[in-house]
Length: 331
Image (cartoon, rainbow, N blue to C red; front, side, top):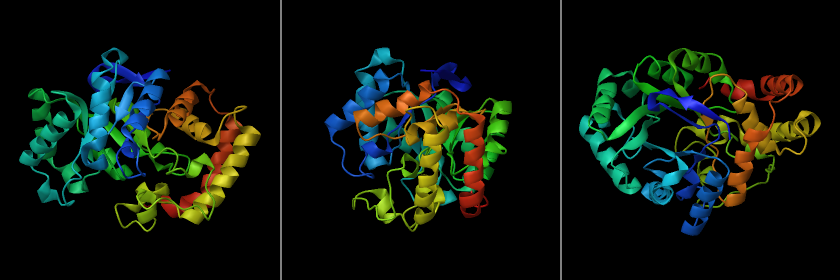
């Protein structure tokens, strides 16, 4: 597996990592055995970067990840978690005391005295802009609680603000074939500032797998069921903010382009991941996986050749015709 530098940690990480939201309970139930098998398959395929958060299954995902990491010390894993979504999203709830309490809980869940990377979890813009936010995070590094810090963001403007902070190690942002705005300024600035870019929601909540139809439904416990109208959190997190019917129609066109112009034998999801890896300034992408088969298939995308110029052009045209008007000016 190719690796790329995460400068703040003075190490490199796999270009395909694994996101573990689905190992909580927000994508339907996943057993402990399935969670372990999924993580094992990812690591066996060369994955060294695991992303979790304190709210995924109310700590369930962190506990799975911590237990797995403890039993695989030879794997060279980099563990990233997130904090800040356990409270109402008001700037006044982001205090020094809250940072320490959230961090203590994650350290306990993960079984780690020092966490490699802690990211603020899509906080309000005022929190990203506040000097004290970064001072408190720097204090946590000095105290040995964390090795580095970053921020997961909802908008490109938030990403650009975060990257003005010298200590910001990473920015996690939605980037996929249906969410291209970060290519314009965010990734170029990341190259200038040596900020690691972590791409999340790479398959547009599954749309880019090509498996969904207009009649697809999801289990009651799946976040895509109760967030189709954006009620649970920012609507841009679900299906990348693309209306479901538009996304399904566009995904069919994407699948046809994969067959016509993509690497031979590659699945649509793998082509979607390879597209992200082709973008200058990208450090790692963190697809989720609910089972070992998916984890291995995702990791295999790193071995695909770069996509052809014809396919890149066709995907740009698809975005401009079908998707741009729905998402480009919002995030």
